Image 1 (cartoon, rainbow, N blue to C red):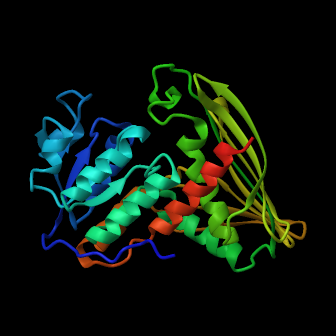
Image 2: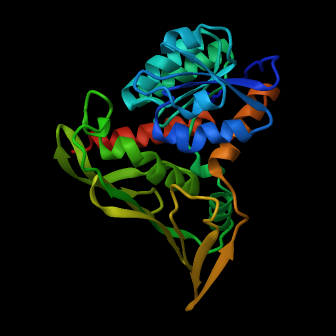
Image 3: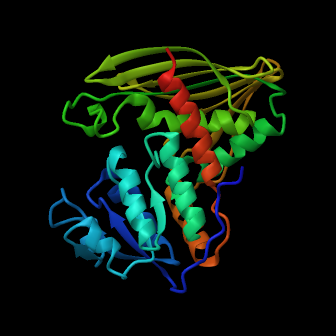
Length: 328
């Protein structure tokens, strides 16, 4: 079923952005700089309930609003970027949709498939652009990697291994709070599951799941996945293991893997390939995934063209994540 709406583009140029949660790390380190660098975008407004007076958005000349509601209802923005804890995403996305705004929301768009479905229906009914801010797929190396595998560069895929682990020590971090949408799988699961679904083209069965719980959330989730034709995948999301990012695909004719696959910088350009006892390094052009995501979203919002991350993909990941989370 097609859940990605057609939508009407705003008449303003450049696209006027409002940032909700402007004190967040990812907003300040990556998304706000990307908005400022994009010629089709303008950082018009921001709101933060936790940040101080010296936020980068203020330095950039954006207008500060005292709360999220006043920013959304101001009429001074065409689009919002939502950078809040997971449990707040759906409520603020609903609010922005009611105001007729284009929405780029941090991942996950909602805590469960029902929430993603709700936003998809709202977007379709109101003809709004709604996107999940999964930046990795916009990185040129990631695009080259997926194309290489899909084009048979290592033969038929047999197994995919994906791991995203780091030590999250602070008990005050919202990721340890069940009420705020915490847990390792919900936090980094999109990085692990999106490339698997993309490369295989179908959703797998959940064969086995192991968890380590803490504070009512999963400190670690390991899952074994199986596909109808016999291929497999292993995923590990953890807040209690040393930092590691791993994405390796093994095929009938070799294997391919990436360094720093999920949060790549402009300097991450290498794709490591092993075939028939030899190894080679393929290269992609340098690229900033956040800059390319903002450029694509702005283009979609102003021209009415499809956003490269359709809501069908967000739904597929949400459904698989939910099945892993519910597995005994």
